[in-house]
Length: 486
Image (cartoon, rainbow, N blue to C red; front, side, top):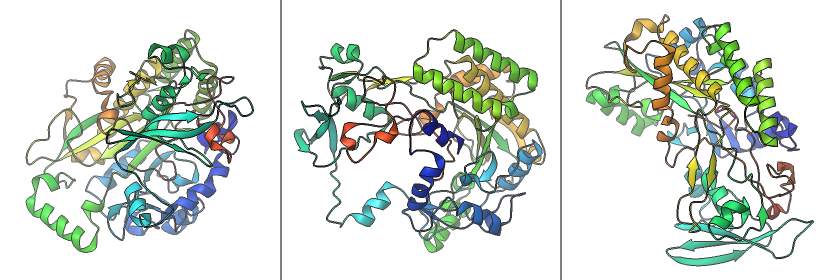
């Protein structure tokens, strides 16, 4: 809730939590939690469902449901997190994501299939007012030579299909939604952006807007893997146990549930203060942050962002660290061994202070843009991620989970100090992009079209004439936004 309210705070009227909740409800299709899917130390299913249904609908296109299958790791993992002082959260979609919780996933439990864009397409493909053109790539936004209220106005889009170029005109509006990387690329190809960059590639600047492609943020993460004791059932059974895998396949084909219909669901959000080894370490991290900010040249947007992010930390109102448990191996640099099962746990920064960029590499729209994420360029981000990694190690050494662990595999057991783990995070910090294709799907950045506000255009200006503007996203909400899952 606090994150969305901060969108509104910096000038995006209409985009607060309360104002967005009706949209969350309209697009979601919530399946109630049951006794069999409730985490330890959670509220009763009746109370949890009552709270969740204030924010999630029941007839939208995107399903929000719970795994019907749990590995042998799930319950002891949750109880161990509780023992570390992190409570079970029964209603994370209420706007408060702090704690460990059973994350709703975008799976239609009637079919066992994911609920995503292709599902929407197949449901509406025969509608006369819905056309999807495949193999097409937008190459340029066309602008009118005349301005409206001093702003350039988008009037059409040029795109290519199988080598041929076409231009379509808009009667009503144009919505720019080309993703984190292609959206700023398309703006710059169209003459909207930093004039120095545009002129470098022979593009005539229509609006000199240096903020386009800047302010990129991504969830730097570091993932570790432990071997579990023989007999502990994890998703690895699908890899090492043919009988288990065949039974799982038969169950999925028959009833559309079981392990093959399950996804990552044990999600924890907590504060930097909670994951820090002690209060002295945390205070040193804050001092390092202040020193770095004071020595860094900031845009007006960055100053606003950093002030709010620091306020979040002081108030403890927004979690800074996510801990994700995956009940299997194969997600780190070390290849899983035969006949062996694992637990993988990732520490993920939620609101980094590091800022990257995305800019054109060429005037050719088919050439990919240059992406510089600048992971962990803020020393605070590095320190926070290292503390998150060390917290995970303390977690895995705590009962009741510790009794299921054989040894740590990645990194090796001789990694024991903060310096060791800092080196480990430096090696693994790009893993956030390794888990998505194209990478990384969780990034965010700013695109804007108003030169008089070089870092943003308020989302409130997205009116009936949306062809005038594109949106800026000052922060990315936590992974636990109402319709997000792992």
